[in-house]
Amino acid sequence: MIYLKSGTAVAGKIVGQTNEYIQVDTGTGIISQYRLDEVGDITGEKLSPDKVQDRYRDILRGRMRRKTQPPRDPNQTFRFQFNPPSNFNFETVLKHTVIYEDASGMRREDVSVSKSQMNIERTSEGFTLVNTPVSTTMTRNSVGVADPLLSVLQHFVVKYYLDSQGRLTRISGYDDLVSLMKKNLSPEDFQKTVAVFSQQTFEEREQGHWKDSVEAIRGKEVKIGETWDSQETYFFPEGEEVVLNVAYEVVGQEACGRRACLKLRLIYGSTRPAFGGARSPLVKESNHPERATNDSEERVEGLSPESQTAGTPQSLMEITGNGIRFIDPLTMLTWGESDEKRITFYDDKTGEREVKRSITDKREQTFHYPDRVF
Image (cartoon, rainbow, N blue to C red; front, top):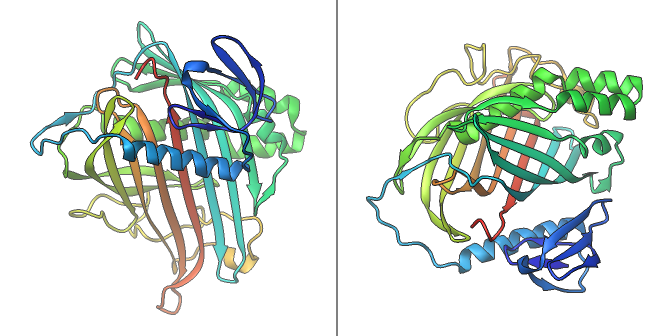
């Protein structure tokens, strides 16, 4: 194990070293390189991929707890400004867990862990953000999944074009993905994948995520303890989308490297906001926001057919959840975030809300920024 000073834990074998760098084979076919001044410790312990992620999270949380908390002025106002450093690279690790359950007791758990290198550069129009995959792994009910699409996605480089205010104006990379899929997937698998993962679907998801995480709070001025309501689009793991109420709360400040991040608490709900009054419709094109339509009741492989019957006027859907985000207001760079949403489908034919099936969607993302920048 290689432990970086930032708190990142890297599992692998050292295959090269100079006076400035070490090279690590992580077993994914990718050789990662780290500066020696970034390395805090090297040990001979071996951990499974899940344990590595748990250790990574523990180290990150411990590091944040050990840091001296910045002084907090209850009257201090913070303004979110999109102003990231130019021409620098950083690393991010995303663990995504989706659990499907139905009333018959059947359960399926999909876990993916993806690692990416990111690059931000300032341009005459604003900024470019390039996402280059490093590795992706997936398990289903704790068993490794060998999917040719995962190999394709490991070469899926996405470039985001932003204006000077941080608004997303264009995305490129999908055409290259289509070429990779044609070369590496069977004609049948290619057609199925493109049907589900079209360019429109991909761009709408990316634009929606950027709008919800960056544009929704950019320029906003807040104080510690302040709360406000907003809305964001939630994309189901298998396609459909709904609009959720989101309640934000500025919990306090946390030290992130040499920066002072704001800790935001988020509460999600499809029936009402957590703080305050009613908002606009929660599920698009529905006079009854909590009602699920036939389209949103996607079928899930591995669950009993009777639990996946097409939606009816008596089929209700409810989404609840919460999340935490650490964000530097002076740059709007995120230092860590996690959220969990639970989507519950009810059968209300008898007037009693009986659970028919549920989806639990968990995301944990950590970020590693170079010490020379922060």
